Length: 419
Image (tube, rainbow, N blue to C red; front, side, top):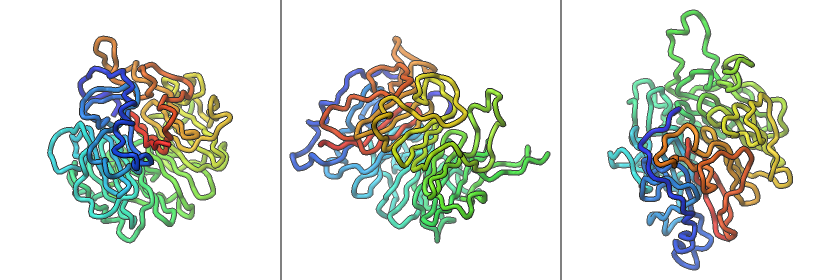
């Protein structure tokens, strides 16, 4: 998803955060977690009931969430998934490939609708550019949305688009703990630490080292069913991430591996891609990894944030737009406080530190269409669409705490709680 899709709508510059307190249904709901979103509003991906973009966080005032708090949010290319505390999944935004998983055949929804056909409680959700996934309480994986390159893992005969959640039958007998969805591929890890990948395999983003013989030009690199990543056999993987053209994982020893296109390579500094997982030796013990369009972030066990790759619009957060080939620690506000979570969009990044949300990188003002000088971006949430090259805290008010943040292509969402 390299170009922005959809028509440009006027950007809402109002914070709208005062609505949050009025949204609380009773005094007993003060501890209930809720969602706020900001950025591009095309196709209703913000779930705010309109197609307007918002340059500052706005609460999702959905009646479906009145009696149930939210556990997680996942922002995709132009759609968003919500997971409630009761294990139900809702979706909003673009639905051209059925990525919302709703019973309606509408091409989009401007407010969250419940995903149809999930038979059990869901514990984890993931959103790719045009496809979606959910993991049940007993470790079954359901997928839906675009399937042109086999990214749903349903086999070569499966339709090119699947509008309803469908169990990945080839994984029966395995307990899936986590799944990460990229642009045209998917990666998952089992409770035993086995890493599997499937979908479009261009640039080595599946980690399978497809052969490079003279006949490989005519051979599809797609995997239509989950396939074990052989180079990671014997290594217990605990965390996986998927970006545009690359993937990453972390094992139980805290080592980080990446595979797929290296953005800096396009400038002629290295080979074009790493077809199998490659260890990043320059990192301390790692806990979490996130993949963006062409950049990668790793969170260490001590709460330090490291990043490398393409640095367009300052998405690495190190105060420059220079490309970095090796991990560089993100300083600024994180030099004295720990980071608890990180998420990467196409060219922007978000992190949580001490309950506060920080964003940086592409604000939307470059590379997008505009009307009357206003872009449809604003995914940094700072009340404008300009770029920020260093982590900058979003104004969420003094009485809320952030628990999770998720970056889409050019929108962002967070799960908050009043304190």
